[in-house]
Length: 311
Image (cartoon, rainbow, N blue to C red):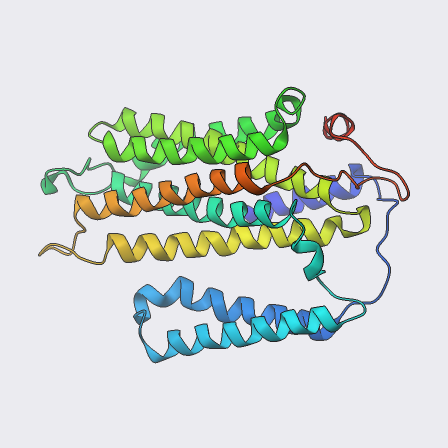
């Protein structure tokens, strides 16, 4: 399915998406690209495999240390380069870094909750708290989450006419946190988790779409690709972090049969709720209004025009 959808996406892009008139200048910085790839690989491998290998195993600790060294080397190389692959100074702008920080936290909360929701739903009822659903039933419970996420993703542009993107990002993150907290408080019935999932999906859709739009508005047009790519990467890194953290909390202790305790899920999901609420707090307290420097070279584009273009 991903292969088929990817091919369709390629064909639609080639046929319908117009070429951008803003073209970045310069050459590809190969050294920066190698260092960037190196620290990402060294970081993501232990995050995804640490639960199996052991978080204190020599391999995990070595890879994490290597990731830190390569990250520092990458930053130094970018700061010294005349043609950086990623403009570090741009990322430190007050309109950019809070949005990227929120993207990391939202990504962590997203996969920390919905990535483990099916497993929670499939926990045997013999435990006294599990719902005992099969894989098909658990998948159906996720449908409201996916509908909410998709609907809000499409609606973000129209909502921006009355609610600024920054507030959409903050409110979306807050809704995610509230939904997860609700799932912790009420999960004895399937419909309760389906409802929490729907609210969670609405929060994800608003957060993801608003974050990307804020980044587009906040950087010069020839840096939009780099800036949005960094935002997407941080969301992915956050997803790996959230999954690893949830796995550690859920399966840190188990009963005689190897099943996790209900309280483990509660602790993990409350942590994810805290991450989402922290993202909302960061956006509200630090993000300034985007500079809206995207568009044709030599001109600015305001929020209403961006909404019209998205529409």
